[in-house]
Image 1 (cartoon, one colour):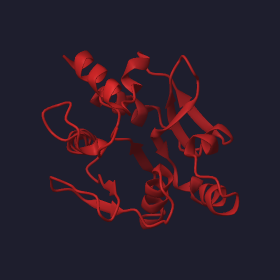
Image 2: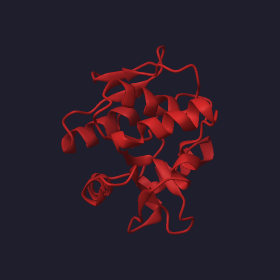
Image 3: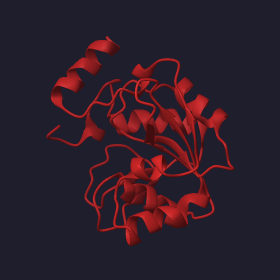
Length: 175
């Protein structure tokens, strides 16, 4: 994208703020995962990334380490079409007996690790995946783990905007 995707505006405020407020309405103990030098333009509870690695696995593991007995609803900031109803469906579909409950598009069937609830029981296995196997992809971890997949009513809610063209398309969809 060439800039911090969390600061992009789709809903008249930075996307990180929009999502934080959306989730906070459903889950009062809501945190934002951020790098040490990441700019935040609103008040929120923050868990700073603690690992030297880059990518979303850093935020997931840092949150799990901060509160190891808690499950984590993880939501990426580059999902401009996600809705409160989509998040509520994820919460309502949660299977605590699995390592995670994750959305997957009907088209791919692949788990979306950044639209998922990660159970605290996944911490040791995810640490092993990252530290011992030296793998940083949370999707590959989920593909090879005992998880619950849920399919949204419309795959479009999981639309991911990672470049300027996708940003423009998302803005057009939102009107």
